Image (cartoon, rainbow, N blue to C red):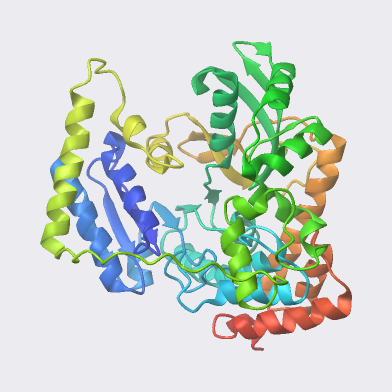
Length: 478
């Protein structure tokens, strides 16, 4: 059983609680080391304490410790797991303490682009990439020197652009992005058809947050027609109106059933009169009400007034570090006992305990050379032969001791091919602009974006967006 060094980059963030949990509960990784790296040592130490505590409870023999120095953290690492910046850009996780992503959303709206999430496509996502790519680039350069064969796993958005930047501009051998959109789409199908997820076999085409099921089988039988019939009868939720319409138009099932993500790959948000005019049922779905409130606050939603905030009750008394650790031990022990008491002792603990993207299972498979099929964001390399070879796509990959290789997914149907090629070109130009600090390339990206506006307006918007992020963009200060 191999002992590996795993470094959590930006490891003080809330995301890493689940990651550390998944790694430690995996028997394949027993006795490994987890280095929690973050520029905020208080947060890093808290996650390290959590990890060491659950390791002791599980008898996993992990060494979990916080590290402030990047070089020391990555030295000799076998795996680097990163979730940094996201839409915040502050090197510490998904939170947005400087309000920079919120400023980007408002700035885009002032120029007529009413983004809702802005973490994958559109000008707000481009700015998130500009803030985050240099941080990832710096980390990977350090890994090239100190752990050149390490597997780099990314969780943050904009997923495809971050992974593409590392593949194109560094020598890291294996770069993998993890998301749960495909799994969520498969779960939706399972509920729609009343069929266990494990009995569904699917093929999909696309890039992160923007993909379609092109083949759907149940025990060898093509059930695509049945899916269409069920969708026609399906009671449409508020965040599924556009999703359902586009599925009908394309003739394929969009994999990630959330209008809030889907709409940012189309020009519709640049065609609104103001921020109160979100189409379909966005006003009651997902991020819709909060986004309209934000626009109303800044005078960008017509006559709509922001809703009055709900008055929260008194804050609970904060727990001491020891009280928090005691609760960790209690909850974790209960989980272990519940699993061990089941009649089916052949159930793998790591499979049962893994959360989200099952990162512990993926790391364990590569560490031991176990062949396993996983949903990953990796370079295409022929998996979808009529899309660019180097594009980062969300596909199935098979693991072994060498890392991971993509599984053949088939050709993209012509309509989807056209949509995806445009998005992939946009991603490529954003990556180049982020590394080179090129304003000209940034403008080219804005023209490639589905929500493109007139060139003069785009240039003025870009100038304003660069001001929003002036403290996070060293590459644009040349």
